[in-house]
Length: 197
Length: 102
Image 1 (cartoon, rainbow over the protein chains, first blue to last red):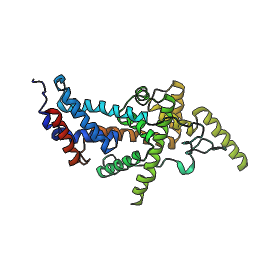
Image 2: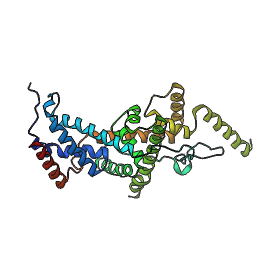
Image 3: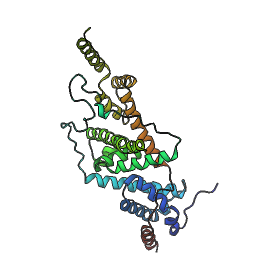
Image 4: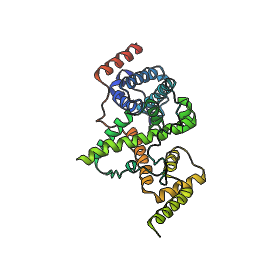
């Protein structure tokens, strides 16, 4: 079997540009930033092309470089954001009955609805995906940074603490609130629209 | 039993159950934490027991998991309908790359 070799770098943008851009967009969620990391990836790959060992395809190799560029971006963004969260206000606790005999139960108007998402329905999935994206973009920046690294990049919490310089206590609170907001956003927008049809 | 006595007894029962399996509030936090770390055995059992008897918390946990699965699936596939590079960006990157090549 022949080892994969790199193609002419002049054709990289045409061959892999769209793929790498889509890959980056799902993670950095900003067009200009996605374009930047893709450009950085090609330039870094050009410099490092002598070190390509042929152990993966060209696209996998480029994607590996892109992943590192994306993490660098998160590291930089993390420095510009404060991950301090206020625990005392009880923000994010408004889903539940605050006091009385029902204390701690779901508040009647916050009880999760039955989504009944049909796994076989392509159109429904597409619509869900669109709303999920919109809801994700509506999250507070510090929430979405943490959430993307955990849920999309599948990083473990120690790694996230390291990349974003956030404490594990704050990370836990942020993940909880991000999930809660996202779920509520989907319920009030996507589900409401579906019910309206 | 009078209806007042009945509702008092119900409240006491609910209180006792909460003591064992935790409140929905606590379960919400545990459901989220369980997605990121392995919970200590005691909390794991409380969570499991609460979810077994509370349909709303079960829904909440399932929906959080659904969101995760959906995002991870979408991140792993390359779907054509998602837009690629704009022509402008493509040209800009191409000329930067060509510049570095020469």
